[in-house]
Picture (spheres, rainbow, N blue to C red):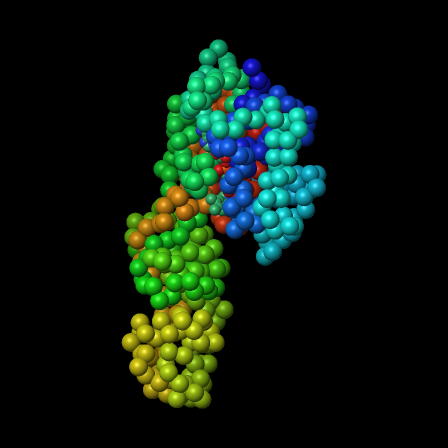
Length: 402
Ligand SMILES: Cc1cc2nc3c(=O)[nH]c(=O)nc-3n(C[C@H](O)[C@H](O)[C@H](O)COP(=O)(O)OP(=O)(O)OC[C@H]3O[C@@H](n4cnc5c(N)ncnc54)[C@H](O)[C@@H]3O)c2cc1C
């Protein structure tokens, strides 16, 4: 019989257990279904682990009630995360507001979080290969049932089982059933921070990376915009700008993107400069019109889809130039779906937050049950916001046990 069982040794579960150890509390058991702790941490931030962001505020979070996240983000925000890792000898460095371990290697973060748990005396505190398939509560105690037939009991349970994204890394969403069985409800789940499917670009541009301002629309309704990396992939588009707008895709019926590949300049500025270019270099192929502004393949492609590829620059009319500039400043790409949970970084939706106390993370339905991290109906933008949420919620929940 333990005081606490933690289900899930991902980022939130590991932060919470470390917090307990920081406060000399060892009366817990961490159950992780994989053969290793924190597998997902290694793939975060392209293997560099983007831990947090200089600009943490609730406006970067989504869900039915994003304001639920405000208290924990305020109390255990970016500075608290920095201090938590600093105390363990890990320093962070910032690139365009995003924080990474100074080594720029995700393993440093994982090593730091698991050192006391799966080395030395900590071994008794964790059980790997322990997939929880059932939870019951009787006479004020929880019993947790494992797939292999084992069972453990405790006064309290923290569910830190993540969402449904990154499915090869232990999170297939089956843990939502545990919470449903205890009376909780789960909002509609959809993949977020995910590549979007579109056949608008064919294969010619595959692999081309660009900066762009991407706006998401639903029929005529504007939803949101983000500026950042944009990548053409097989049958779709990717990159930070696309990932960020994907977090709102669930609320659209007929989504399309409007992509501005030259967000730094107005149409008028570009047209004026291009009029000079065609005067000076009239002998060149029209496909070179936009080189100097965008990747040469993109210039070629825009000119082709505008029906101008057989002209020279000198043969382009004023309206040809305006047409090409209108396309490169607002290319419309209908969206046919997402690449799904297996490719997504985070799950939009989760356990209803109005069923959970925003300060303690205790269930309002079951005393002694706590839910943290991605399992809840809170997901963040791309840029360190999701690990920060896992951290903030885990730290707030840990306060109940120290
Ligand atoms: C490719 C990729 C890149 C990402 N990059 C970033 C980034 O750079 N910055 C950022 O902020 N976020 C990033 N994220 C998102 C971030 O990793 C997650 O939001 C965060 O890890 C959620 O933490 P968590 O502890 O709630 O869940 P997880 O980290 O998913 O951990 C849940 C754990 O619970 C275990 N588990 C699940 N069910 C059971 C069960 N029934 N019994 C026992 N154990 C169970 C799982 O095996 C897993 O170890 C990325 C995600 C992916 C997939």
